[in-house]
Length: 374
Ligand SMILES: Nc1nc2c(ncn2[C@@H]2O[C@H](COP(=O)(O)OP(=O)(O)OP(=O)(O)O)[C@@H](O)[C@H]2O)c(=O)[nH]1
Ligand SMILES: [Mg+2]
Image (cartoon, rainbow, N blue to C red; front, side, top):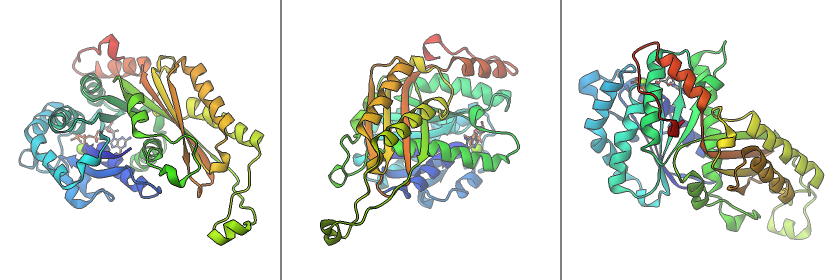
C-alpha cells in the first residue's frame, strides 16, 4: 500500500521518520513521500530519514521554534493558520500514486494532536484517498495536561480521520530506562507493526510464491468504518537451511530452501498468532469488540504453511468473535524469522479512557468522550 506519511509534532515526526528508516530495510517501498511538520526546530533537526526539505517548521513568529509546550489552544491556532501552506510541500511528490495518507502524532502534546484535524480537512479538499491517523496515548501519570489533551484529541480525531491506529505509551514504557531510549525502543515496536502491514501490500506477486498477497484494498476495507484500531505482532526465529542446489537452480544461480516439516511450521504459526494477540498489542483493548481484522504472515516462504495460517485465522475469529478476518502472506526469502502482524479494527478501549479521564480531571474538566467513541 502506497502512503504519503506526515508526522506532526515531536512524537509524530519521530514515528514518521522511523517508518521511512524501516522502509529502507525492506525489499519493497511503501511511501511516495514523507514529511514532518512541527513548531519545534530542535525536534525537526533531530530527524534522520525524512529529507531536510520535507521537515517544515511553522509558527516561528509566535513561538520562535520552541513548540507550544502542551498548549492545545495555541497549537490549534497555529495549525489552522498554517495548514494550507504546510500542505503545499506535498506538491513535489507523486501524490497520485498514494493509496492513502497517514498522519502520525502524539495525542497528549499541543502541536501534533491539534494539527491533524485541520490538516485532514484541508487534505480532503484535494485528495480522495482515505486518511488514517496514528495516535500515541500518554502514560496515565505523565501530566494532567497530556491526559486532558489526549481525551480531547481522541474525541475529535475519531470523527475526522478514516481510522485512528493507537499506540499506548502506558503499556510500553518501562521504568529504569531513559526517556529517549524508551521512545526509540517503543517507536521501533510501533513502526515494525505499521511497516510490515504496509510493505506486505507492496510485494511484487510475480516474484514470489505467495498464494495470497495482500493488496491495498484489503487494508482499506479492514480500516473502513472508522473508529480506532490496534496492531498485534510477534516474531519467531526459525531455521533456514538451503539444500544443495539442483541443476536448474545452479544454472539459474539460485539455491532452493529445504522443505520445512509441516508440523513444525504449524506449531510456530500457532504460537506466533497467540503471542501476537495476547502479548503484542499496541494498546490494550477489548478484542471482543473487533469489527474487522487482517493478519499478515511474513517470513521465509517455506515456513508460511497454509494450514497453519488458516488455523491462525480461525484463532483470531474465536478470540474476537469477529467474522470479517482477512489474511495474506508476506514472503521474505532472506529473513530468519516468522512475523505475524494483526490489525484489529473498530475496537473499544474502555479502561484506558477511564484512566485518562481520571488523570485529566486533576486539572480542568474536559468534555466526556461519547459512549459510541469508547
Ligand atoms: N511513543 C512516543 N511517545 C512520545 C515521543 N515523544 C513524545 N512522546 C509522548 O508524546 C506526548 C507529548 O507530545 P509531543 O509529541 O512531544 O508534543 P508535540 O506535538 O510536539 O507538541 P508540543 O511539544 O506541545 O508543542 C507525551 O505523552 C510524550 O510522552 C516518542 O518519540 N514516542
Ligand atoms: Mg513538541
